[in-house]
Image (cartoon, rainbow, N blue to C red):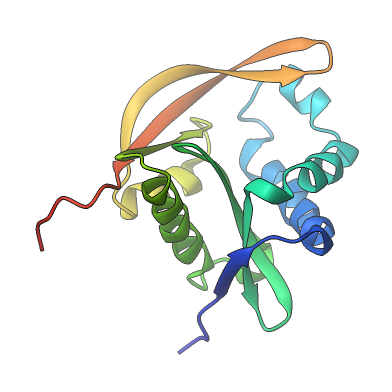
Length: 166
């Protein structure tokens, strides 16, 4: 049985590992599934800048002394969930998603949501296995250096509040 990942708040020293995972994972799940206008602004450098800027929103999963994946949560939105290709299938993604749900609940929200590119079938299957429901299409507005980019996405939701039932 594999050793479970430990989750903790990210620290600035994690930003490089987060950026590497984010950059490679984003390419896997998004190239061919999002508008070219978004691909143009998601340069390699942009992932390093955003990872450093977003340390405060980031939780990492650590196996041994390596960052195996991360999640970013803001309010009721699970903004990013990425696992290193070396650790896919190890349970890290499920651990991170459960932590994200806990953070949303702890933030006082009864329901979490996240956006998924329609063509990212692997991610969509994973979220559905974890009890998330596809609520339908929506226009995800992404800020870029030259204005807002419209990205067609699927909105997945999941209740996270304690219901009192066992």
